[in-house]
Length: 292
Image: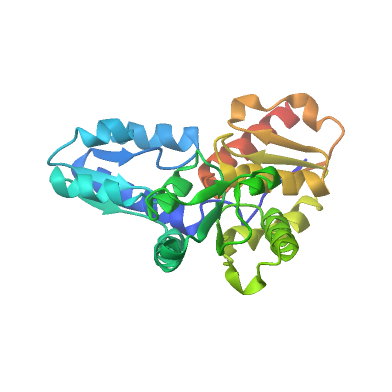
């Protein structure tokens, strides 16, 4: 049985930066608060928790004082920083540079169009932490859309500035963009009032061609990711699109021996929130159960 791990898989730059920041403080101080799950992977969270990381939600965060709190790669809205100033909280800001840049763009864009009644639109998951941070730059006046049907919320006679959560599917974003253009044309509002920003992370979207090529080389693919990972859901569908013998695995215990009976090669890949050590653990287990 040939078993290989995708060399392109593993933490993206933003997640790697956040995890490294947490590990350094935990190594020197033994404990650290993190606002929300540092990474959307339960196995990695358990490892960090064993090192002393304490995850808090926003209500718990507001009650903290005189301590250090890590801001994860997803970023946070302005009120999180106001709470830190008020409660003497030292923030270790690990917001992904790509997300931070997008937050700044959205803030400036909203300032440009708010007085004229324009609409700032974010294509993303309403419940996602990154989207909360992005919408917070507009005082939560941004219109968040998740699917084509949500486009009925928009007024196509007014200016529209469109952005996307950094981990959304690029093709879906293009579909949304083209549909907005069609509706503006029908409303005869003038395309000059529409602005679309390419805000999907290049590191995420750039992985897709390489991921497809990797998946074609194996009889079976194991995609290792937490169900919580938005990026993981997108990349898993890309894998399954080129290799129907693809399985979604949250943890090694979910692996079934029957998956490997008719195959001679297995490829292992994952989301940008999947640690390499977990994929290595999966690879080792596959080798054990296929040789026993």
